[in-house]
Image 1 (tube, rainbow, N blue to C red):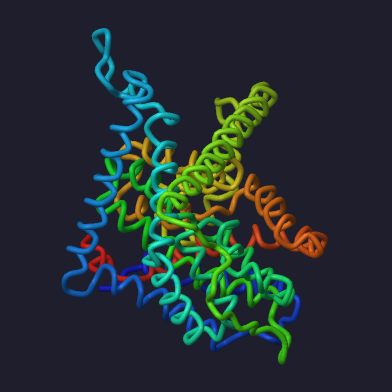
Image 2 (cartoon, rainbow, N blue to C red):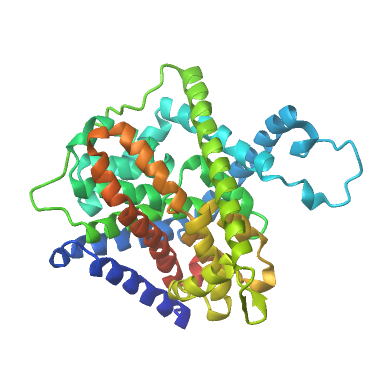
Length: 424
């Protein structure tokens, strides 16, 4: 049965599309067929992964795989770091919760999944999955072969790794296709971080691994649609055809594992550095805001973000009493990265956020659209297509805007579906 909350999410979906149309470079070229196709693909994928018979078994298998990867990673981490990573403690522990350390309990997962992803790519398993999604996006949304492949690769790889898949075609892409690739990269997450997010949310959200996986998949069509609305493709342009002989190759299984681990290490170092700096900056701003008192409490960045983004959270289907906390999480994602936002989401007390809101926020937060990713995007694409660096610089902030809205659109689509689909 549909409820007012479902209609609320539908309103949010309309508003998100309308906002992108308002800032479009060509408002007369609204892609109606693509809009219907993208929303249809999103809804179909969500229903296929949650509502069809046997889907719960698939999600349970995904959850079991994530748990297995987490346990295996813990073995390797504890071998290197011992009691610091949750191994046998040399002293009595009064607070078991204090043993959780982000650096030792979450970041090592990225190393393992990065190496595993490289190995699966070398064995062509991940490549064929990417090709299947690429074919789906090509047929349902009219993307050119290269663009479709890049969009599909973003579901499993990172926002810089996926352009490598079509590196031979990057210089042939139109401005609209470059923008689309950037938006989808910011709207989705890499497989290596996906498992880390699921591990963070597992204690507080049923089927956390399934929701995170679905979030990254269905945000890709949302990113395509919003990118095409903001910068429509010029008729007769675009559609570079890829022969799917990817530039991303490994010499052997061992080479894939070693290079995958090295790539994962760079991701871990980038995440660690960005988190340290951005959390420190926010703390510094809070110190400067400490002299301002509003409502009997000191003004903080978190409170400001809660005020600013609360209406946005309401639009995607969050009940108003919880919109302040949800809005704060959206602001944290934009400024401090989705990692910090997911950690904070996992720490929100059960009485402060119901299961529906927690589920919607999982979809709304699951994307790389944050200020820190702007630098990563510019740096990565400047290396891959140095001759188009100025073009990338001119598009990156628009891409951040569209990528942020894409995950909100995904949450709105989820919120518009009956709660029974998700077993609520």
